[in-house]
Amino acid sequence: MMKPIPTGPCSRFPFENELSWSKNAREFLLRTAQKYGDICKFRLRGIDLYFVSDPELVREVLVTQDKLFVKGLGFERIRPWLGNGLVTSEGEVHKRQRRLLQSAFHRQRIEAYAQTMQEEAEKACASLQDGQAIDLLPFIEDVAFRIATACMFDENLDAERPAVIQAMRLSSRYMDAVKSYSVAALWRRWTGQAEKEKWEAIRLLHTMVDGIIASRRQDTEDRGDLLSMLVLALDEEGDGKGLSDQEVRDQVITLLVAGFDTIASSLTTCIYLLARHPDAEQCVVDEMAGLLGGRPAGFAESLALGRATAAFSEAIRLYPAGWLLPRRATADVQIGDYLIPENATVVVSPYVNHHDPRYFPDPEQFKLERWPEQRGGLPKMAYYPFGAGSRVCIGQQFAWMEANIVLASFLQRWRFEPAFDGPLPYKSTMSLRPANSCPGFIRKRT
Ligand code: HEM
Image (cartoon, rainbow, N blue to C red; front, side, top):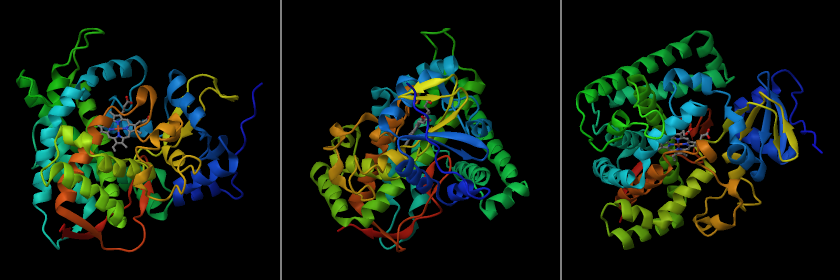
């Protein structure tokens, strides 16, 4: 016997839900889950959203019944950037792409990227000075970008870096403008500024990536980077063919966008939270001193740094970059005792599940001691910062390794001292990231 899906928050005046969402979408969803339970339905921007928050039901959406869902809401908007890459493709095309890309993320390849990550992290951290005023967010973005491009293209792209980072920022500003109901966002939409920025960003990214692909097609040698793998890959299990230039471009931009912003936001969050929790930071640094004694971390060391891993786990529990995962049902789907109709938009939220006090007592607190001890006792979808099922993040090993390597290079030398009181503001659009900046000072670790 099916149960009716409870009706969630209803607007008492026009656009009430939209305004609450615009003000703080995360709080809106947390309140909704607390008040209406494991699943509910509410209206937002003319669409009925089915919000699933019970971990077992989330598992059905993302894992056990994932064939009955495609990516939903918002993904059409990012298609002009990402084309038909791994994040946006569906069905057989997605399966083929996943097969082709998987080898770029095999353990051996990941191990080989460690050296590159270490060199880039060391270079960036060695350039800092005691007492220097810094905005942590662009500093970490810069490190993450250098690492991404060095691992992907075997090049630093020093000349292009500022413009491409700017293109990434423009794309996220565009997403803010189309998703937000703030006066500034409405104004930018109305004046066409948002649309103009979107096309500027797209042109810039396409020009840069097309140039790199064209020059790489000239040489057939495997340089060990991700681009070589994409250019040389053949679909052995499928049609035996490789990727076209257009497909390579879509994948490169997809990996750059999916892998750069997420890791930059998460690492900034982690360093910031450690700065606010000196005991936890000391614990991470003591472990580094014991294992590394001031040396940078490589692949093996990055796996051994349990306290750094705990800090990063906690940072992406509190602020998961992929905080909201939308899907669209391609048929009527039974989820638990509920029937979700064909074409319905379903959302699940790692952010909401990660703040559930049943699984994370004092959910707002940053506590290293949750990890790894607690992990074994959690239901599967109580913690899923990298998603799950067939669309699980392909770059998660890459991200864990990069996090510990950068943390080791930074924390063994420096302390970050925030130059503001109160919490770091976040914004939640397609991804959850620090809203603007994270100002502070660099202090030498003694
Ligand atoms: C802390 C860092 C990261 C976080 C929190 C994160 C999170 C996620 C999440 C939640 C998803 C699933 C989205 C969904 O189900 O709709 C995802 C997918 C994806 N991520 Fe990541 N990610 C991170 C780093 C990376 C890196 C470093 C790369 C690449 C180098 C990457 C590439 C991708 C790709 C290509 C997908 C799409 C996979 C597919 O649909 O088959 N991510 N990521």
